Amino acid sequence: MTRRVLVATEKPFAKKAVDGISEIVKQAGYELKLLESYKDRSDLLAAVADVDALIVRSDVVDAAVLDAGKQLKIVVRAGAGFDNVDLKAATAHNAVVMNTPGQNANAVAELVFGLMLALARRNYTGKDGTELRGKRLGLHAYGAVGRWVATIAKGFGMELCAFDPYIPREKIAGDGLTPVAAVDELFASCDYLSLHIPKTKETTKSIDFALMSKMKKGAALINTARAEVIDEPSLLRMFAERPDFSYAADIAPECAKEIAEKYAGRYFFTAKKMGAQTAEANVNAGLAAARQIVGFFEKGDTAFKVN
Ligand code: 3PG
Image (tube, rainbow, N blue to C red):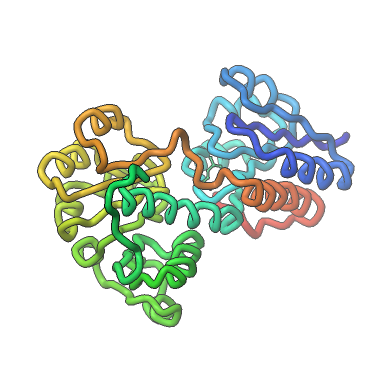
């Protein structure tokens, strides 16, 4: 029987990426099904019913999707964070879950600078701004995105430090950054703090008032990771108690409206989650996902398995 691959994306890939995925899938002799910009989960549940493989972005793949996908053998999250996929349910359904680490990292890293510049240049309103050169940038996690941020920051002439308990200090130091031993030390010592932690049980709401209140006077927090890592009551408290604090994100918090009403000029939120929304990132992550599926079926390759 011909294998079927479903690409299900509430936020569609660029056309070039879809064409590339289609070519890889067809060359392997498989069929491609496309479900883009769907508004209702029932569309996803129906579409997944007769497919062997699923490619998603931030689309939620929970037990209901896995139940509906009776033939599903592999789910690939075209991107880094796989917090949208229920790994336990996938394992219980004998489905392999993979991500495509690093493939969209540069796009996210470039947006970090778009956000920092928006704050530094006072949202481009014409008011006096500041420069990034010479400022200290702290990276909370030093994975693929963090490394690209560091590469670009060197061009801006920023001083760099990073906290990541999972990466050897020698690796961080070898890349020219100062390794920081504790997260509160990172928050206390930087002008800009950029979050690159995944959303896990441990990191959810981990950016709380105790941590944020350690930030230097005038420091800014940049979040291109996940909205959920921020404790929102703490964020509101920071805005209220620290008039020098500013915050920019491509994943606006639920309290965005309140921030916008009360704290004009101290925040910047993009219209939607768009860190990885570039043609290049879509092509890199989408094609990698398609290749990983073919590699899995044809050669049993599970190199990027996360469950
Ligand atoms: C990721 O985890 O790879 C990024 O957050 C991108 O997510 P997206 O595919 O929904 O844009």
